[in-house]
Length: 396
Image 1: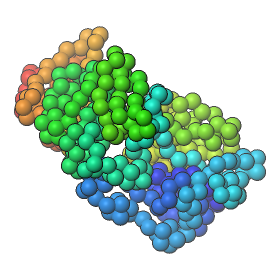
Image 2: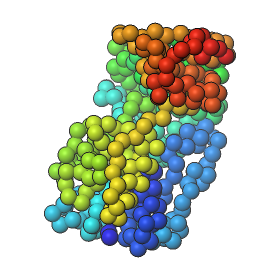
Image 3: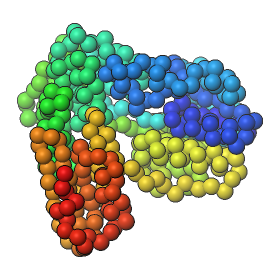
């Protein structure tokens, strides 16, 4: 079987490894826009912080691909698919026939469509080359501003501080950090901890409306007419699946490329996995579901009766070195919910238990040992009855 894969991220490399386990004869070609073999993209944060090199986060060199009989085309992404001819065409003009074509080309960072977004020293962080460009400012730029206070934005800010940059500001549209994972008290404790440990600055409840500067960015302006000075701006405002080629091919798409339980798209012999795939209305955007989808697809392509029914999202997170759990209903504003919570602002600890009726319905922990947090997660996942006094669950 001839398999052509667009993209060389974790879903792609997992698919290759699983296919080779099932049949070493699988004929695979990978096309990527990057100029190097696979590396662990989440570990770019370590490179940004000067804690790892690109070699240390690159587990498979070009010799590995050759040894596994995989053709890797770097700096040469697929730009067109002739589905009737079952042919993929690359940027360089290379035409390759396929039995199965797989979209595993991930996402692009979202840049706010605002005036000034094209000024110099405005970046996103997706590739190693992005990190290299940002690191050129170390020691020279004095004011780093990150637009977006989600998990990635916080990780980037902390990495900049660990690299020696002391003037780092996070701008967040919502009035508190991580509104999908935390409640206001928990977010306040996390914010205080990050301010103390990394000396980060926060501007919350700010809608970015414009970047100002002559040639280089000099200022970030908000909708309330306030502003903050900036030498370097990094957008961390979410991602968008790469669906342009799929759209031109006639593949059904919504937010991502729509796939069924066999990871098939609406066009015969074309599949999608990883960040670009939308399964049962869900876009996952994290590593574990990408790996699970790749393993299922390897079996599907090998004619095994395997289905992907969705992934259970892990609620254990590590945000800038802080262990955090967020599971179930963490901040309900209606219904028969009650909660008990306790926090320590100085030590960066927080626990919250939410019940519905007499059952565990949600939990938040910050700075709590993983083993203890997982016990609470299990109570929520199983909807266990809350028979004993809840206060014992929030003791430190």
